[in-house]
Length: 378
Image (cartoon, helix red, strand yellow):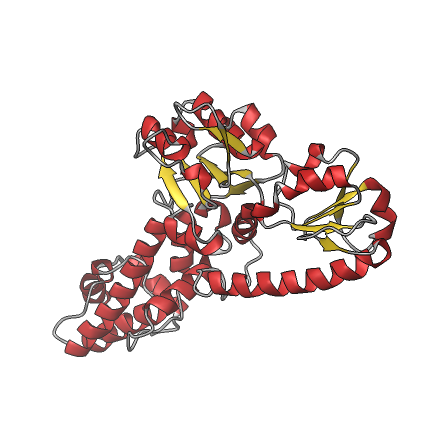
């Protein structure tokens, strides 16, 4: 729970991680607070401008104020405990809904990838945040499950002028900044740094100016800026986002976790596929670690689909018994069960003739001897 309190109340709120202020203007713009505690009318007037962002205002002054929660200063910690319990339960339910079919939810990954996506889901609490991710690691299915409803604009697809017009609006176009939504700008590396900074300033400061209109409007949107490379993030952007930054690693950087993700993904994809064994060979896992994953998740899912197709085809062709399938005719890394059954079939047909066995399977004698030893076949 994000709590902002006057510095004088610090000793009364020991059980919570809170931020204190001397001058409230120094902190109120920096974050989307869950609770802001004030003790004088001047601070209260400032905070009430932010009620539309969902802030719970707690007033501990002596006056009774309408539309604001009035709490005795001695009861403030009890109130925060109750409020935090309700908030945590609400967040827990919301997280379960968002992540019910997220790829990583059924697994207990300790990898930095899982940690990065968890941190990404929390960025919507800030006004502005930055994310670095390479080649599709922020695909739409991931964004929808981690940050919920959002609007996405991609500088690699749309013209910069079109994005600016959609965000800031004009006399004839309603600005998106007026909506209470999460805006994700993809591939900001390709945009003019001045334009990105202008967008970031509007979100961070909480106000913007519509093109051709002198009046300033309140910016209700939250902003996430995506860069391919952290070296491309302009220094002012880094300063504005501060601690609200996530670096999502590439798949090749989490090679130790890929076997776990692979097992789960293949099992999920093949739920309705019969006669497929999932006792994976070591070759499969070695290939997972060697792959470059140029399209990241898209490449990974293609690999999984090809694997399942190869396994299914092997069992189907063996049942037909017309010809022994060659290993190379399928995905190069079939399961150990698939390899075992192919080699056994070839041995049954060609007995001790290793040359014919190798020709039938499409492998060399060295590979055959290795596999015979692995599977204890004679």
